[in-house]
Image (cartoon, rainbow, N blue to C red; front, side):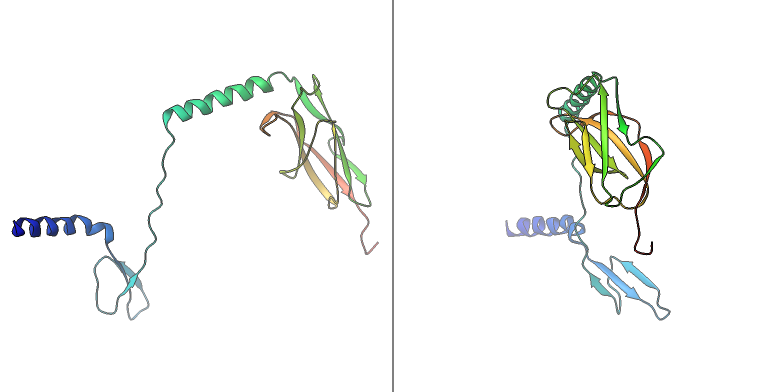
Length: 174
């Protein structure tokens, strides 16, 4: 009986061995670095972080995501368009403080729970259901602004054409 137990214990160590394998780092006389799973003279053991594993979503969750995407598309289809009314595309203007007031419109007007969202140089800078967003301290130079309509969850359901504009601000040298 003890012999069988010893054999089972030995086999389980062989099976578990690769899971707990060590990695050894060795540097030769020329400075070349090699790694191995076998120890050698002058080699040092290296601690290796555990492997990252990713669990894929279950098929039913993927189907739920598809349903949500369809819902967003359906919700966004109620709008024919969304756009900036100010500033205009390629407009240049002076703003001593760097404040830029964006005015937006959509056809038809916003539904309850929806908002306009403005992005400046790819970053969200404000949301409003009133149709205006003021962004403070915009640096001088040319910028790109984007316009979206978002639902009550903050999900973009309609996107309009982006615009480019240039802000002129006084400098310390002027």
